[in-house]
Image 1 (cartoon, rainbow, N blue to C red):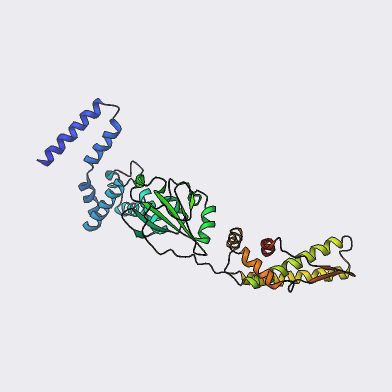
Image 2 (image 1 turned 90 degrees about the vertical axis):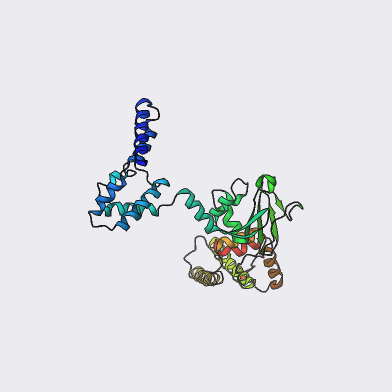
Length: 340
């Protein structure tokens, strides 16, 4: 009975195709799907000494790949096409397309990799966001700079903050608070950002996100006193070398000048190596970020006040002594001199 119904359906489709040119392409694909002779192809593969189990497995994988639109070539979508090929070629093809991820699968994987669900209540989910891609996915339709295509802002904020997103289960019920970015900085200060990128120190009373442990970001900060000391000495020898070259124009080959230049260059090499050792676990960009956010500035100023004049030297050009300048107005630039 089922066979008779299938024949009637096939004949009906053929009559429609003959009369309706506009829908020909779609109906032809449907007709090919119905009339695809899987049994015949299976029999052909069996003659190649392939087990029935393997054939059934790869036939099922073929159907799955088609249903997920992983097969793009029209010929390769037709099982009759593969009936004319060796089974090993069919198997290799299915192995390849099966490894390909659909857009939905890729998005799901990226979300899983970059976001951990850490809390939930009746109104919100809270995720710990650890990758730029996850920030873009979960922060879609917000004005947060960390969700922009460029990762520049993400890199800056993620180095100095632990980032969480609270996402409403019914976004329309909460307006601009449908998505909330929650940032915890190195001092454990918490700030909140609504979907329009407005910053707040606390949430409105009508917004109830679940309670969760807000982790302070872990950043290894070097011994700032040693870094300050080496940074000033680096600046001193760089300044002294430049001053020497400026005053020695036309007499650069003078033995005394050459000797002094060698001295400052050797000191520059020594203190550069020392600075590199002190900052080996502390990236240049992180240093910039922490200075620009004021996280190191006050600490460095305290160190300068404590050390006072003790680490400043004098340089002598001929009979004229010259005091090495202080850096009260350029602490960050002084400390960054190593990187210039």
